[in-house]
Image (cartoon, rainbow, N blue to C red; front, side, top):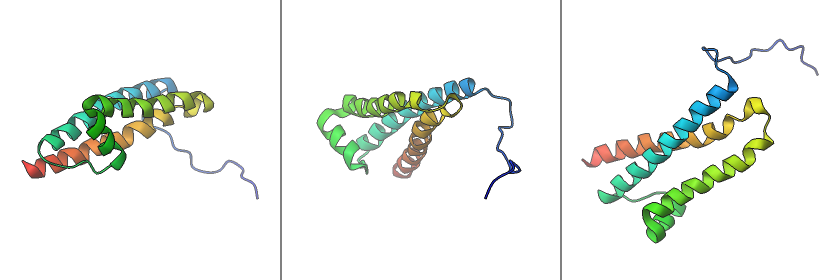
Length: 116
């Protein structure tokens, strides 16, 4: 079986270079990291419990600094693996970090809003 290339190809609605997209995603990584840590600790102050057992043990043992170190480890792994990808696909690394952390921020904000 072969393909003659007649398949739909996804394109962004705006003309964005891979480098510009990756930079924007790294900014989102930074914002979502800070948002996740801040909303997590705000929830903990309100009596909520961290559901991730790894994060819970890091928070119990090292607090705020430990949480940033855990996030830094995830970013470090992404940066180490990034050069292994072709340049056009390197934006998947910050996207893979930013998307779950942004979702976590939204969930944290929702849970906090139900407590207040």
